[in-house]
Amino acid sequence: MPNLKESAFIKIQNNLFRPKEEIIDKFSERELLRKARIMFCVTKKMEDPFITDKELVNFLTSGCEGTLPNVSPSTAYRDIAAVTRITGNVQLAAKDWYRYMIIEGGKRGVALAEKLGDPKGVAANLNVIGKYTQADKDDIQHFFDMMVPPDYEITGDPAVLDELEDNETKRIDYDKRRRELRDLYKSGSVVDIETVYVTDDE
Image 1 (cartoon, rainbow, N blue to C red):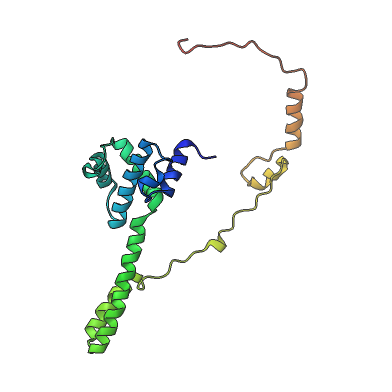
Image 2 (tube, one colour):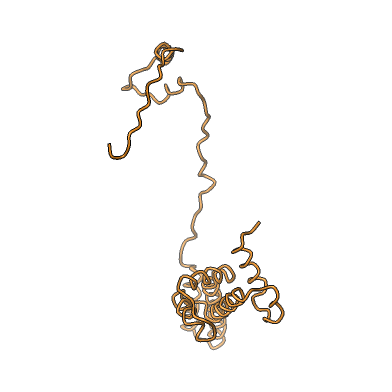
């Protein structure tokens, strides 16, 4: 079950661009103000995907350029976190869009240069396409199928440690050592001692 903050965010997200008259009975005055701030920021981010968080903070702390009450920087950053959840990584999407536009423009440039019989123009446009598609670089090789993790078998048998010993390691008789430890700590040989509590200043 979502907590109160998460429920408020979901409510704002689901009604972000709905007019105030339609939702006034579902929102408190404080939630309506936050909804308006987030709506303004989402709009600004969609208009300019490369707007920085600092610019949005300044926008929010100034009361959205005087249209809403001023907020503290901590409240502004909290609103920006909500905006980012709604919009996702708009900057990355914008870069992909610009890259697509550049490549498509390069294709049209190649077609136009060929039509005009301009080999330098064809080469220049192909160079642009090659740069933005990274056609001049080798594909990254992934060797995930060769990255097989070791298959460890869990055991309580100390004899398997023999495999770790080399010629310089002293060979251990594990059965003998086990008997020695059992004799040392046999039943009744362990005696409780008095517990002494020590304070920090002692």
